[in-house]
Length: 96
Image 1 (cartoon, rainbow, N blue to C red):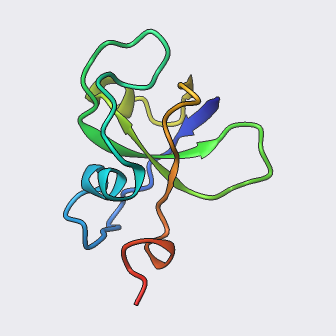
Image 2 (image 1 turned 180 degrees about the vertical axis):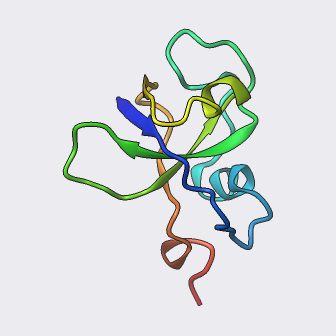
Image 3 (image 1 turned 90 degrees about the vertical axis):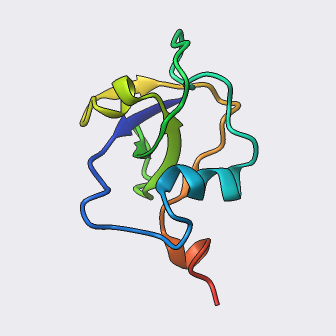
């Protein structure tokens, strides 16, 4: 799957504590390695991403290593086995 790493964290927060905690709460067990193909670093950050080449413009959270998280605006290929979790807190942790 190809995603675009967007700079979506500008002032946005959620009640999970961090975007990585948000992903862990709704995505399950954190992967051992960054989901970017060929990366063997530990995922450290819940990055905001969008699906590349898709009509779906939803913002998602994906656990990435700090090196891949820093590459804003770039398209990266990630494992299909790691779930994309909606960044819209009304759909997740902000539901009442």
